[in-house]
Structures are given as structure tokens and as C-alpha cells.
Length: 499
Ligand code: ADP
Image 1 (cartoon, rainbow, N blue to C red):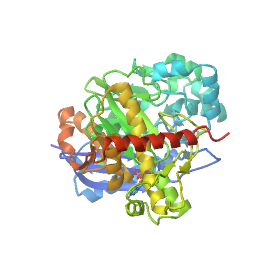
Image 2: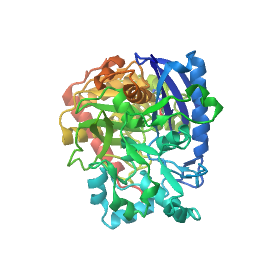
Image 3: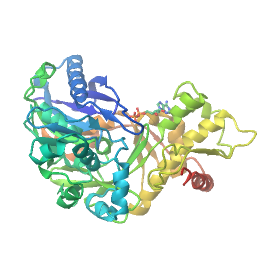
Image 4: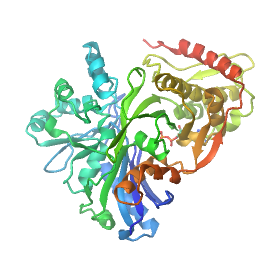
């Protein structure tokens, strides 16, 4: 019997394909970056054909490196950058415009107008989201309003919309299957998370013809089979595509957070914190987002989500702009030269502050500088600033949902021991770092493997994840409170700065 699963990880800067064995171990990896397109300040686009080209190459490469036979591959799982929006012609398969990437702010004014008209509560109640340009809904509206003929063609049923997993599945199946999984659908601002279906009222509000929307499906079931003529996919022809989750939800699953109250944080360019919220969206968590985590075997699980806009990017800023370090890793050795922050705080509000502060006008600051402050203190304040922001999210989740017992971590900056120790100290909980940090791809592989018989039940994921290291609180709780109070003062001064 086939025992291997391939996870396609279609991210913001590259496409990857990772083959896992039944122990959850990585057999081989293929990866290919693609071009970022910045037509104007604040606008971000990709060419949707690049997603296919780089993903198919990554799949071929991973397969060739694995030494496996086609029959060894039991199924394909997908995980992807969320919210990114593609509209294409149903007949020709050609996109009518570039993919509008989640980071793109071009619809910010439209979102402000919706908020001013008082639609915030309606959107929150139905979708679990705050009105924001991140989400797909206003991006679809922009394409229909700005690409000549697009609205007429959409109304005539000639155009299809999809987030990135939808686009991949449609193309992998040779244009036969037009679906979106619940976790991705719940990031569109058009999806009713209580009914698990498109919301007519919200589609009408944004003037989006419902005929262009994909069919919402669960996260672990057979959607279709590879049926593409692309030569690079020859080894995969006939293989079922049977799992799909947005990247953050996939990481929550890959971290084994299958019980209510379990939390993961990804320390990347930004941070994404997700808590398993159990079988219903959490009412009252006003500063956080509610979203579908997954629906597997008929059981739907929701998540609370918050994000830090600038985390690892603040380390890059020390390297590329301040030039006080040569590499990201050097921030750790520099910070270790001093025993504490010496009273210095760095608030990396470069583009405002996300949850739970929600202040688009906040800007970064370094405060508490004295004549004795060194670059080591700044490095330390940078690392600690990331931890304080994650702690603010954990505190908001704690208030909304009850006590958090520990935090599972991943992402490029989670390799920093000094950062993980400080997170544990300041948050007063164990920080659990897994041996396989590819939790996003593992989550997608797992969802697919459940649907095609490689694994049997949800709890099998627990055997696939082993801890590499657990950091436990070493700091006196009184000291942690004193330091956090300093952070809160610093944040107040960063808030509401830009005009
Ligand atoms: P993304 O997926 O968001 O692009 P990654 O998960 O690859 O990001 O993480 C990259 C981030 O991790 C960078 O912003 C970088 O500053 C940070 N980083 C990389 N190596 C280290 C390290 N050794 N210590 C601390 N931070 C690091």
C-alpha cells in the first residue's frame, strides 16, 4: 500500500513540495521562488501562472529526489498563503488579472467606507473577521470594478474566483474541480462561518456574483485526481488531492493542537498566533479573529487568531538598516552580551500594531535609552519586543478563552533560544519547540493522509510530532510583571503617532 504523502506549500515568496513518510518524517523537498510584483506603493501582486510553474517544478524535483515510485504516493495535501485572490476564465483557464496578494492594501479605502457605513458588526458576526483589505472579498470587488469587461463576464458565468488552493486544485485536476476548503473560505469575508457556506448578504454588499465562487468543502476528503497534461506531473497522474488548509490552520494541526485551548505561534516575518477554540466560534473575543481551523471527519473546529505585523522583520531591520548585526542569527549572540534590556524597549510598530491593539497609526520606537545603552541592549530589546507582542496576544486569548497551558512554536525566528526563553519567562508558560519545524506542510500532509488511509484518526498526529526542546519559566513572576509594565508604557507612547 502507498505510504507517502506529498504536501504542496504554496507560500508568499516560494512554492515548495515536501514528501513525508508515515512517521511524519521528511523524505525530500523541492522549492522554487517566484517574482514579487509591486505596481504601486502598498500594492502587491503575483502572476498566477508562476504559482503553477514553480509548484509543478517543486513537485517534480521532490519526487525525483525521493527515489520513490509513482505508486508510493498515496495522496496530495495543499497548504497556501491565505486570502490572495485570483479570478480566471472558466473556458481558457487564463487569469483576467494578476493575483492580488494578501499584503496588498489597495482596497483599504473601500474597507474604511464599509466600516464608516457601520457594517463592522455584521461582518464580525457572520465571518468572525474585522473589515480589512487583507481579506479576499474587497480584492474580488476591485478586479470586477477595474478590469475592463470583468463584471459583465462574471455575471454571465464566464469567470471563476479562487484563493490559491482553489487555483491549484482546479489546475491539477485539469479544470474539473472548483472548490475551496473551509479554512481558506473563512478568510474571504464572504463566508458565513456558522453555516459553513457563502453568505448572500455579504456577496450582495460587495456586489460579487455568487456563480463565480468555488464550492466550499471540508479539509480532509478526496476533491479530485491529478489530471493535468503538464509533463512535470506525469508521476502524479491519478493521485488523489485529498487535503487542504490555509497555512496558519495547517500549522495549528501540524503542531498537534487538536484539543480546545491549545495554542501555536509562528515566528516569521510577522507572527501568527492561533488557538484551538473548540467546536464553536468564541463569542466576545472582540480584539481577535474567529476563523475555521478545519473540518475533518464531519467535526468542525474553530480557531482564535491574532497576528503581530512586524516580528522577524524587526531583526532584519537591525541587520539591513541599522546595520548593527551582519546576519539574523547574530542578534542572539549580541543580545546575550548583556544580562537584561538595561531599561530599553523596542516597539516594532513599523506598519502599525495588530491584535489586540489594532492601531494602524502606531509607529515604531526605541525608548529608555541612556548614555550607557549599547547596541547589545538594542538587540535584546528587539528580541524582547517580539516576545512582548506575542504575550499581548496570549493575554487577549487567555481573557477570551481561559488559561493557556503552553505554547507550541515554529517559524524562522523560533530557532532563537534566547527569544524562546524570554517568551517563557514573560508569559509564564512552557514553550515547546518541535523537532520537525515544517509544521505547516506536516499539517497539510496529515489532512491528506487521513483521507487516503495513511493515518486513521486525528490523534495520530500526536505521534508524528516530537519536541526538540521545551523552555520553562526561569524568571521571578514579580520581575516578569515589572518588565511587562514597562512594555505597556512603551506601547502607549508608540500608539496613535502617524497622522
Ligand atoms: P516567513 O515565512 O515569514 O518569510 P520565516 O519563518 O522564514 O519567515 O522566518 C524568517 C525570519 O526569522 C526573519 O525575519 C529573520 O529575521 C528571522 N530569523 C532567521 N534566523 C534567525 C535566528 N537565528 N535568530 C532569530 N531570528 C531569525
